[in-house]
Amino acid sequence: MGGTADVVVVGGGVSGLTTALVLAERGRRVRVWSRDPASGTTSAVAGALWWPYRIEPGARAGDWSLETLRVRLPLIDMPVHLAWLERRLAAAGGVLERRTVRDFGEAAAEAPVVVNCTGLGARELVPDPGVRPVRGQLVVVENPGVREWFAEADPASSATTYFFPQPGGLVLGGTAEADDWRTEPDPGTAEAIVARCARVRPEIAGARVTAHRVGLRPSRDGGVRIEAEELPGGGLLVHNYGHGGAGVTVAWGCARAAASLVG
Image (tube, rainbow, N blue to C red; front, side, top):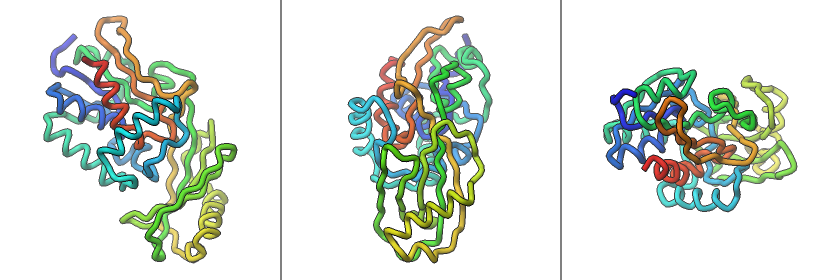
């Protein structure tokens, strides 16, 4: 194994960046390998309300969520937040690299510890067939004057109703479609989202649509996986994935739990 870093974190979404930051601020030499820029990850299109939504195990998720709430506001502008994490990581000495990983052995050749924050990518990379997509679609409209956020979800339904005022407009949602790999917006779904939100705030019906967003939440049968194992060629592999619809909500709690396994 090489010695260019103490830890390589694989995955550059909110979980990977937060975990890398916790480790770097504890004095570790950290490199983050991400196939996509943070702006191209699922994290970037999240509605980003602090909400333990579609995440297991419930008891641990509650503790992780409260840890995160102590650090950030309950509603987050994700592009701004991801950029802030990147800047803070750089200030702590962390290095962010665009790199596609096909085997954890590649990272183990560069550092004695590898942290797996690959989200949906863990399905093939681990491999873990229990990792499944839960498709979420959002609509962004020009804000007609809405200043309060609203969220209502039926666990038995794939449809949710919420709107969040953000600097770039009013974010409307949403859907939670299990095992749906489609990444293109569906026009019919978009119309239904606007209609549901307009039943709560009628002025939304006439708002101009500015964007459509689709993200695939990284759900996992059995819930979040935070555990360590030895790699076949030597080195330690720490897993931190399977956050479902609450990646932002549990980011700091899970990051600290994963960091504790690094030692």
